[in-house]
Image 1: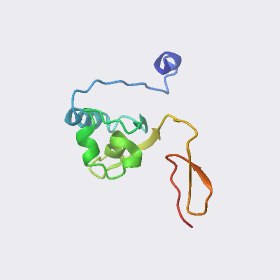
Image 2 (image 1 turned 90 degrees about the horizontal axis):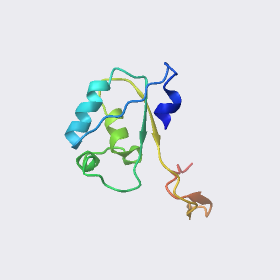
Image 3 (image 1 turned 45 degrees about the horizontal axis):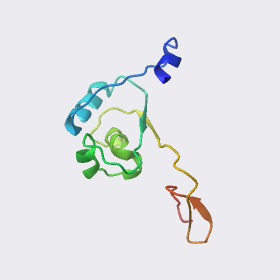
Length: 111
């Protein structure tokens, strides 16, 4: 859908690649590391894919998801902006230490 809507806009490139393993995923990302200024990646809903399971074990920033974490690691030479998106999963509310309601999955920073 996105690819069809933007196919006439030459300033936007939509790339979809197929991977069969975590190692192949990293290899595909490395092939593209200098080609783009912005990468938009999705973050899973706590579902481990066999394709990212190995990556998730080494994840330094789990809030970015396995692919987002790979893109921001110091092992990646390119300087690319990474936008991580996550599908909203409902209005489950939790409370912070002060009793304020916060959405599930939100990150709070104590002041």
